[in-house]
Length: 312
Image 1 (cartoon, rainbow, N blue to C red):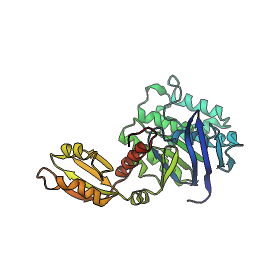
Image 2: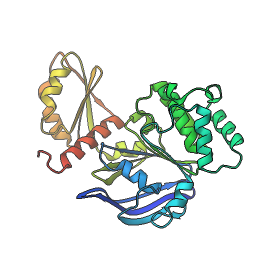
Image 3: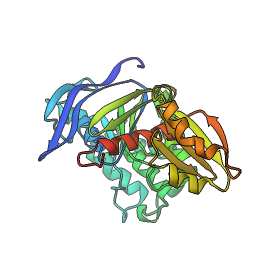
Image 4: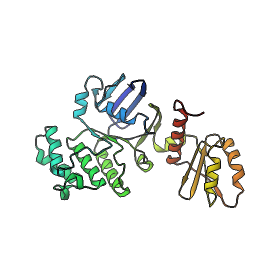
């Protein structure tokens, strides 16, 4: 935890009809920390983010965000938070400058001209100030959306899968901007499905069925999963993958390019499952350190098995 606590919530709950989307969630995030929010689709990430920024009222629990009470001061929270949604939500028929000026008016920023000049320089948008937002590439749209989120100089940034559909170069540049702002004290909570982005976070939390089940650095999360992982390479990996997918002891299996990753938490059971395949000439096996991708797939598989109505 870095310095002052920015997010401090306990026992958050949210229900939509008969479905409990967030269950007894407790989370603390410190000033200047980049906290990665991971989980399967429908695990409660977006609902949690919307509760934290004052857009949804929790059905239970308590806590503060930026020192403001989550239940009694949602408007104050919204004034000091930047929230970037999954979909581009600015006006595509307005220019970059016109969109930012509109946002500045909404926040009643006094010196709008200075604020616009500052944020466009920060996001390197000056050369595109007169370009229609709808003609921007995905990466530049994300920069514009981020500029709109930080125009009022928030102390907390909530990003909901901000780089979905953006090319790797634009994603890396986006994250360089995020890290630069975090070094100046901005706190960031970001949901993502990209493991290279998760590894750039100071800390990772993982939600499953609305519950927080993992919390730690990338190294701590990998170590805490207790996974034993083997890699196989060779022309036989597809046949091996098909046969091993439902084998006892195999809890996570995925093909990454030319390599097959097989993982489990019961080493003896995993060894027994792999034994018939280790002597084959078309496969070369090697023990490997689990990656965050291995752990994420393992957790996704666990979530699927725990889902109500899932096959045993």
